[in-house]
Each structure stands twice: as C-alpha cells, then as structure tokens.
Length: 201
Image (cartoon, rainbow, N blue to C red; front, side):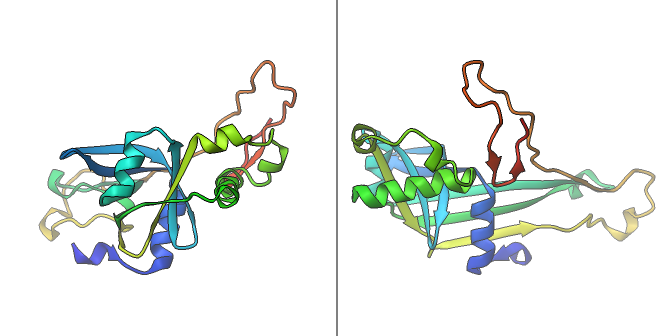
C-alpha cells in the first residue's frame, strides 16, 4: 500500500521519538532473534543500551539488524469484517549498530536519554559511577536506511455496503499518564515532570 509510505526524516523522527520501545531483530549463529528494548534518538541516530556482557550487543556490532517501531492510534470499524483496520504509525530501520566507547560521550548520551523522558532529572540523581558506566554498552544506528508507514484516515467501505445497518467509524487510542505510585521510603513525594506533561503527586 504505497499511499501509506513516508520517507522524509521529519516523519520518521517523529515516530521514533513518540515510542518508548523498539524491537531489534538480529542473528546469532544463524538463529533469528527479535528483542524489545527501550530506545531514544539524537540527531540522525537511534540509541539503545544494556549490559556489556549481552550476546545481543555483540551480535549487533558484528552483523546486520532490523529495528521496528509501531504505534496504534485508532481502531477502524467498517461495515464489512474485511475492511476493518487500524490507524497506526510505524518505522522500519535497517543497518549495523556501532559501539559508543568514549566514556564522556557515553555519559552525555545516557543523560540525554533520561532527560528526554524526564526533563532535568539527570542533575538530581546520584551520579553514575565508573563501574556502572563500564558495565553498560551503548550502541547507535544511523537512520539513513529507514522508512515509515502511516494510516490516519477513516473507514473505506465498498459503496454497496454503505447502507448496511451497523456502526462505522474510528475509535481513537492514546497513551495516558496514570497516577504516580510513590515508594514508601522515597524522600521526595512529588513525582517529576515527564515529556508528556506533569505526572501528579
């Protein structure tokens, strides 16, 4: 369905930034794997992080990978079962990850990750120590080989079905911020701001 394809960087970046989790597909010894993981974007790169000992991270720097992101925006209910659909935004990225090894850059990128979710939070946290930084791998992949697909319209029924006596339309889907659940031993009781707005207290 070529009418759903989008290739411009702004469209791709917007979808990447709107999602928390991507699925990373790769091979280890000829066996396919697809692992969901948290991601973030800076400039023209998508970043992921994890334990340095991870077999996944070793495989991602040695071979090709495919990353997918999908966001559901609405349920599309038609008059025919075969014309039901979903409004969605998705991105597929191909390429090879590279390891970020410079400790200063690694810390800056991890700060961007935290502050991207909770603006200004990094400076309030207990500083990351050298042991933690050394145990963490940071990988990035360029968004040069990426494409998006978007469906954001209503029902497309056959003309002959338009008079059928059943409801047709779109039921929107969205992510909402819930009530924060403060730890009993938390010194601070007011939840932080998130990139989606106040989380309450």
